[in-house]
Length: 115
Image 1 (spheres, one colour):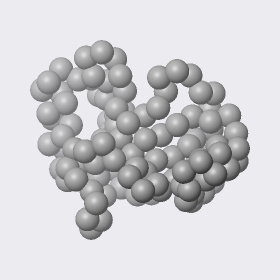
Image 2: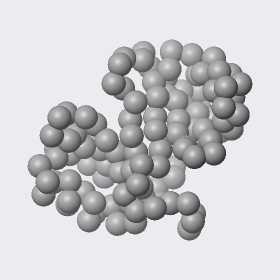
Image 3: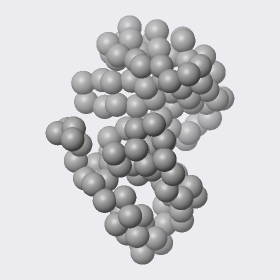
């Protein structure tokens, strides 16, 4: 298990980008981020204090997706529901684990993932 993962801590951020190649070049030059491509429409990055990704799309103010890590995704989902959050994407599998997405009381969409 990755020792830098902390339960329910912001751990990953996703951006929309019209041009992933330009985004990769920009963030490599600015911050030295390292990238791993997963097909032509997604690239993940690693920085010193944050990991994230870029997916193909038109950037719109407010479209960065904050992703929390959870040691127990079912328990985290139940806490979201109990607190009044709305599940917008139920738990699904992806090549790194599982995740779900919810909106908070202000309508912000946030994701939670586990290995």
